Image 1 (cartoon, rainbow, N blue to C red):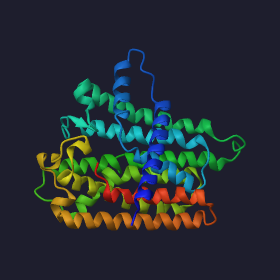
Image 2 (cartoon, rainbow, N blue to C red):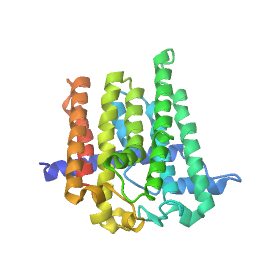
Image 3 (tube, helix red, strand yellow):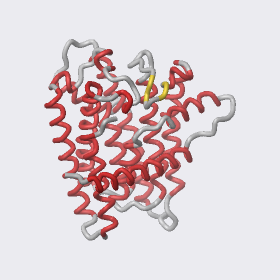
Length: 323
């Protein structure tokens, strides 16, 4: 049972981390200038619309868990949020979900027009990889002669590309669109959509953070499983909130899944069973994190223990989130 003091401390820690992520994002966003100024404005508008910054935060926490200490992680943190944002910009388009509000603000296509929103999404995806590649210029002083550092950056880039691509997020989006034409989905089909469309970028975040800090192959397998659990739990909770959420807290109208005739985990399994699955997955993810933490940092000081507890609480927050 989480006490009021523990919850308050967690919220304060989370706010500090969100602010730190925001500062990193602003540092890496493009300058709004030149003949292409409009698309750059649309890109920045989309990224700065707010949000939990869950993906870059998880990436940074995993990097720290595996002993990473340099700023080399920062361009990857900015990159994953750009990729996530581009997917939302395209998701909101009239040809997709046709949403007019996200995070309490008008969506990019409403403000800048459909064509510019498409270009802004394309721009964010391309600029994400331009940004991540800057990590090669940020190898810590004194480590320049270690080939494994450069190999880790290359491996993290491959993970990012694969999880965001046709065998990852785009593949999930494809299956999601085609599912609208079917009378009923199987649980397997729905989990494929959730895994690829939502969990894939969370896996990319956590795996890239671990790889950049030097995680081994067995550890990486555990991180991928943990991130899968988090991603599926997050998406099921999203389905739940679309039914029982508060539109003021969500920053968008509820009931969009029903409006778009979308089959979700809730429509297939019911509300209570969906809530139980979120609890199960989140608990399993927390157990994996605890095991990784104990194996990696068994002798940490009390202060570091607080950081470790934050990561576990961040995962468990997914169970009770309201937006």
